[in-house]
Structure formats: C-alpha cells, structure tokens
Length: 135
Image (cartoon, rainbow, N blue to C red; front, top):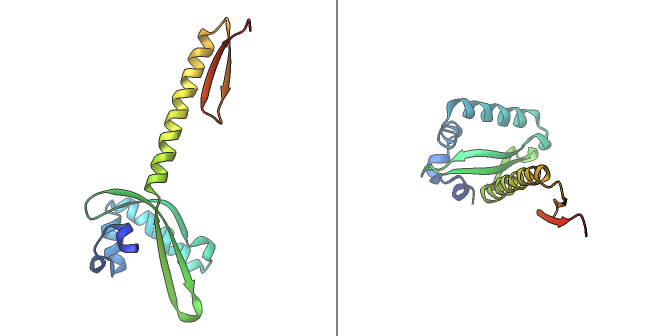
C-alpha cells in the first residue's frame, strides 16, 4: 500500500533523497516537510514521528493528502514507515466547511431580512428553519 498510496513505482522510492524530490516537487515545501520529518526522527520520540495532512504529488501529477507514521524498532535498528491516503476525508471536510459557510451566510442574510420572523438554526443538522413569530 505504501507505493500505491504515494503513487510512484517502487524503484523510484528506494532512495530517501529521490523520494522527497519526487513526492514533494515544490522545493520550499519539500524542505519544510523534510525538516519536520528529520526533526521527528532525530528526537527518538514516537509521538513526534507522525505527520498528518501532508500534501504529496503522484507520478501522474495527482495531488493527495496523506498521514504518515514512522515506527522505530530501536532494538533492531529498523524504522517502519506507514502511510494512509486521507484525500477523500480531507475533501469531505472541506466540502462540509464550505457548505456550512454558505449556510451561515444565508442565516446572516435571513436574520437581517426577517424582522417579522424568528429564525431557528440547528448547526448539528445543518438546517435552517424559518417560522412566523406569530406561531
């Protein structure tokens, strides 16, 4: 799954320098991520070896959002790297936030226009219900 998630052939990802070069094509972003990863690994603290919502680019130019974790096996001098594609959940979260912002804007407009109405907003259901204050 590692190779599939990053979207590059396995032979392209064997060298760490090449991995960073391919997966993070923007030089500035690549250096920022590399510094975070190296600092986490050098710390020896497993809690600092988790990186969430990292933007990567596949061999086909597709942008993905991933969460990665390095698990050190100190006794064996091995580092296990795992990665999870969180692109869909990231896109869903963004779409929900966008719709919430639209509802909040509509709510604000309705609040200004509804002098004779009461407005009930149920954010947990993302619904706006309008009813006459006379009820």
